[in-house]
Length: 156
Image (cartoon, rainbow, N blue to C red; front, side, top):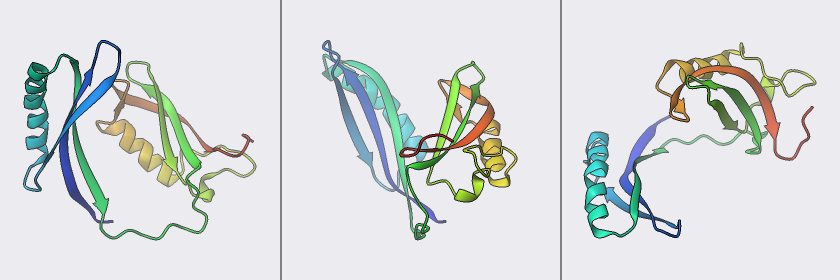
């Protein structure tokens, strides 16, 4: 894999008195660092607020990376077939992480269950619970269940 940073942008989200949302987005040159874009988002928000009757409700810094050496999808790839991991955040919120086109070898025979001790699954769980990954404003505390979900198939 060779991911390359291609675009950088900052966006300011606004909402009017009717509940409608709007967005102001600004792109940055390839020389801008992630720190530059984050700082710009913080600086852009008050400038937009001064020019708009709508309320500023958030700012987002976005970095888009593209795979420069993409692989060919496997013959059994199906986006609708997903590995789903569920658990809890440190604040008690529900965590749900979904990986599209899960490999068939993950599924335990005759069920939709996936073992959390599977080497590849365990590596992802370790990453999610041991890094800055968060959901509902809180770090992920635990992943307690893994299973396969398919949009067009009833659960086993």
